[in-house]
Amino acid sequence: MTAPTHRPPRTAHPHIGAFVRFVVCGGGVGLASGGVLVLLSERIPLVVANALITVVSTVIATELHSRISFRSDRRGWRIHLRSGLTVAVSYAFTTGALLVLHAVEDSPSMMVEQTVYLSASAVAGVGRFALLRFAVFTTPGAAPAEGSATLGRSSVAIAA
Image (cartoon, rainbow, N blue to C red; front, side, top):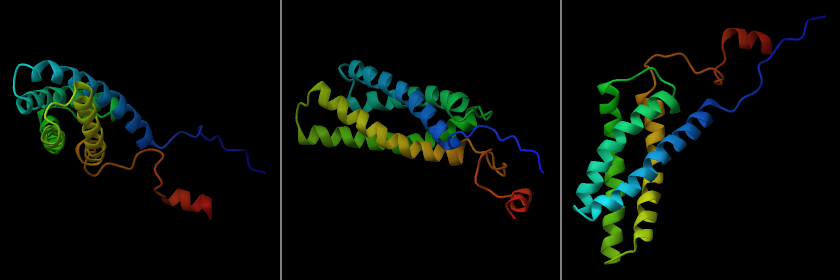
């Protein structure tokens, strides 16, 4: 008779946990960015305000994502530059959404403008998560994450 094997408690897929942390960190930075956009867009052109906010919030969010979302030890300006490339698409997407809104409606309310901005940011954020998770914060040639579905020789032997 074989002794029962101790199995660790079943946890959610590691990408789900990373995505939840990504949403909390990125969402917090995004909400703060929306508030700053309102303040800045009264003083400078909207496109310039969005560009400034995008740069500053990207630096902050990249640090949060590195440390909290992906629990990565990869840091430094190289990571910030790679992350910045993913933001280029986000910037184009959020700016495009705001420009379309202003083309359709001459003077949208602050609530409508914020809804469009935050919605566009959320859609762009999902794409950023994928790029950051699988391209920026993944170490090249790294072993699969714990709990991944990769089968090794011992797994196959146990299954047989």
